[in-house]
Length: 247
Length: 306
Image (cartoon, rainbow over all chains, first blue to last red; front, side, top):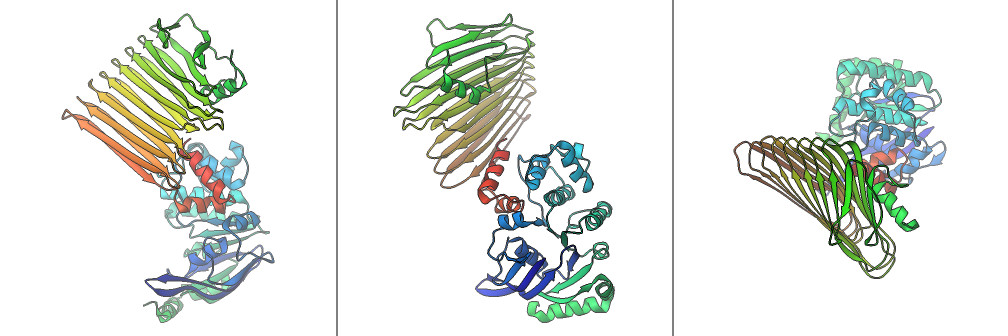
């Protein structure tokens, strides 16, 4: 279980401090599939980075399985079972797909095992296993490799920051299946996805709407989804967003 | 015969666990330690004792020559001249390399000049590794010079590696290429401490359709210094590419000096040079996979130099 208590994250730009996340509290139960959605600039990615330890909150506490992890490093959180998939995957010269998946798994994997992870994200393993994770891979390919690294970790909490970004619609169909499969198989661990995609929202247990650094709505899919697809409610989210002084 | 330290050095520079198959000449502490020749590959000492001549008969296929050099005494300074005469239509791998173990206070230095005369349509793979060890105050110094003369249709792939322990090195490689010949250079270099490494390449493309690709990947750590100086001269219809890609760390300094000289309208020459530190994002990504910052850095460097 992950608990965020009164988390704030502030940045200073041109001597002016700006709150990206505002006094946010949220509890993610085990075995849940949670989607965080909301307008761009609303603090979703920042929140995901705060959970993974990439950004340290300005104030507030984070508990993972009852342990205060607020001051723990990225590495410590990863070892405790928090996985994180980047919105924009990182490239490495000389490190192959095979190397990266093995690093993620924390052990040397057989080629067949690496292939299984790649097949899950819709990559034909034979073509990719020895490729370097560099600019020779397309954005969509890199994204799939990125997701495969999170799968290989087998984390208790897997966070994906906009997995659909940079993937064409056709490929996205397969990716939905990846998440559906994860949802079915991984009842122990929880999955937290930041997404704008209706098909991802459709398979969520819970939806959190974040705007201007605050939770504006939270609840089960059946309760929240209808309010999101109706134009009025999106307008009201935008209204609130505008009211937040972002202008 | 070679001792334990020398055996370890041989393993580092030539990947040798035991005596290699095929032709070899092992030089230890300034003297010949062992030699083997084959029906196609002859190795003879020069009359003045300054080095060896390696003669490879035309048509020699899938054979190898190992000529490692190891130094394990402090204060030894040597200069060797090795010449390779390669006939026509050969396909041969040549593994050279130098390992210095210096536990003493005096400098140990190995300088050498390798000259290659590559016959028509021959294909050569040349691997040269440099390695230094020993905790003495004496420096481990290597200054290799390489001269490559390539005849029509020949090709040569040079793998130059210096990963650890060499305090000071100036490497100069010159090559001239006849028509249809091809030279590929892959250099991997890592310097640390106060080491200094200078790599100079000068490739002249003299024959029509000659091609070269000189690529260096390097990592400079601590207060080390690196200079990459690659010059490609195109004198006819030809293709040349030079690339220097370097990671800079700590207080290191790197100077990249790519030079292109086109003396013909159909000479197509390109150079690329990039120097930068390890991207913070790369470290962060590997940390999310459970690696510490130091482990992440090591993986990134290992991958880069692989």
